[in-house]
Length: 319
Ligand code: DGY
Image (cartoon, rainbow, N blue to C red; front, side, top):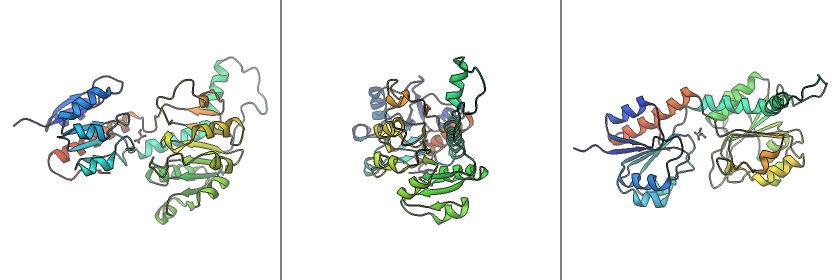
């Protein structure tokens, strides 16, 4: 009996591929750049399973051509690169990788918050440029983190993990979700706010919501205008949740103090993007979950989801 084909769109750890080879024929896009669309479409036509990255678009076109497809296992917790509704209609299972990346992503969120508040990257550039001529009272002064107010938009697993870190800094924790989450309130001592109130009260506004039709561009001119002039905006969710032109204006006109961005509407962010010209922006190349250990766990979980579906079992983490 011929084994089903699994197509993996990036080079992953040997042990992950070997595990899949026990149940399937596995082909891998070995290069460290996204699999070209045409290759991806051709492979999808033959594959029963795809192990995808957030850079791979799984849409109507692909699903129409992928007649043998049973499962798309995305190696990310976010899955806005996949038309999950269209997949469902065709009986294709979609899975993601929650939990295993929670703590690493919360670490990065907090690191970005600290770096932005205390101007770490700017200070490093300043020193390396030979501009450090003397100590001075307000040299590279930033904002207090301890005892400040943190507003989390999107209180899920990562939000709670960020809130636990914030507790160590004595921060007051607010959150906004579509609906209040009493269990989160109890676990991390967070207070529910309507969005506008959260924006008005917070010193740090942290975006952690998934990108959906409801959250697309949810932070725009009106929302930034509600924030404090000393406030810091952090985005570790998806670039599409923010109107980047409005964010640029808010930062350039000093309506808010600074922003830390791990995600952009277009990735990789074009080098001539206006946000990159501002000294009060700390920009990162979408590295929220990027630790060796976490990326290995994400790959293993994606592979486990594929194995489960190919073996006729329930996937571990369906979306
Ligand atoms: C995710 O999992 O959605 C992250 O953005 C990838 O690191």
